[in-house]
Image (cartoon, rainbow, N blue to C red; front, side):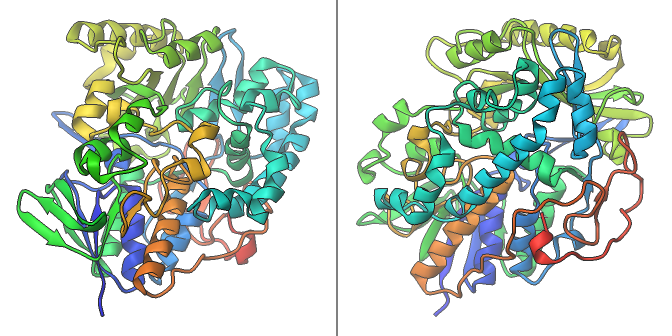
Length: 550
């Protein structure tokens, strides 16, 4: 018998689940409230008198493509035939508050030379950090690739073996303190906790693996932006028989006796054997399921959940090229800890914020009209809360002016006069436009009380035949992690409904590729130099053995 599955949301988790479940033989329908796929990983397309600009909405770093390659492989496809991933020679430039700077790359001798300008002793410890993180990732990879259905799963042998490396008493910054004495060097290896919307002084030490994975496996830019990846996933899913119902928001998850039986939209009810939720988890709990129909995740618990930060965004189309600016640049304020406290307290946005810039056109010029560039600016701020920032028009304008001043002081003195297109997003806009609970764009915080078994389960514990994908469930946020979570959830669903098993894909043996080598075989190459990729497709390279694939 064919089994039917309704998926709510065409974000990265929903698209991955759709592909995997179609490959397992399910009849899959995806309901998406917007006109485009991708959710927070979609694209802003701006048509202006100067031409079209294309911006990533949210994620801009593409890491660890192995998981997505496996998902394409489950349908007999090769990721590199559908998406061109350009490996960046320079990962990013870090600009510190004291004027120092560091250019990061997977070329470890080069990285050591960069770090040695800040601290020669710390530069010598980089191989020790990488070796420790390699052991940590190898120990935790099996844990992060399986579900946590009950507290007993916390005590399984793989978890017990990994626990000594978790070091729960340490934060990311404290763990790095065992390798690096210079606080600027620790920041270079810990700012990645922003991918989870957390402070490195609060984030569990497990997440030092974020920086490690950048150096071990590289950072990529998908040609056309992350939206191109999402569209490729949707295209392959459609070819596998998945139906997409766009511009059709789900109003209710239908249940009988705490079992999901389908969804209701403005066009009526659709019955199905299972429901996969890819909508923002906390928002969905308070809008799509009645409070009385839940046990663990009732409104009271949702109201006390610890949330990630939000972001203040500027999407700028500008005249001319920004050739002096790296593809990724992170500007760190002098008072970084105070900056993070202001974000966590959320009473007002940071007075001298740290921020991130993406100058994607230096790698992918087609994202902007000729002789123009896109500039993406992300400033971490507190999520919406009682007593927090009121993002009135006046406050938006005030904070925009403050950020513009920071941009000018960071090497873009004439930026404001070059702007030909501008879009601003605040936590209010994340909440209203993309239905993000309190504007917390990185979902539930990744503290120890909201990880593993304590995070919402992939097989949702409150409603049978309902499964979760996205950053709000195990293993957590970040695109490769969301893809892995979708694989976990799809595997559970396939097992429960008697579908064909979903394979685990290729194995990984913990070894790194040399920086100049392709990580997934044909089509995944390095940038031509540290600043700009070649305009054409990267040269093909010999396919590597599965164990060497990143």
